[in-house]
Image (cartoon, rainbow over all chains, first blue to last red; front, side, top):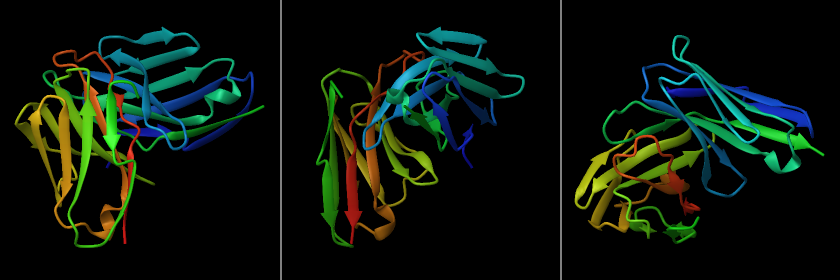
Length: 112
Length: 114
């Protein structure tokens, strides 16, 4: 089973609205990361949040982490058509070395 | 993506033939990874490397082998390709010791086994 599981699997919104995606995981982690993948392309790193952090911002992105609930959320504010992509959470359990485990992703569609 | 290239980008091969995919980086990163991406499974780790000649298995390593004789190159070999290995393969790199850095992914290799 996936260490990270995103919810919802698909999300369709209008331009200008906020998009929220959630990720749950099963075991303790060192950090949690979010990636974006445009159709037919590789994954692009968006943001990383450490296990001792609760919230992090980067531009229009806001990530929260609740280690007690083993969950994270990614908020994209004022969405644009260009935000249309698949979004993946990935967890890293290691304290030395690194091995990311990915969820199945959320497909976000932003309609103009 | 800048600093990491995968080759070939597309390949069609026959069942039973050997196939080698190449990942080349110019970032001098210590860590390199091979993932496969399939619908309904997200990305799954095949093999990874923490340095030259230092490789280990991921969660879906059966039927695959890897080699890393130079820092910049990480090769993934399908010894005898099967239809279940039809997938999109991604290579990724990250810095050593920088546990708080994200991965940089290549553009992927779409492999079809017929």
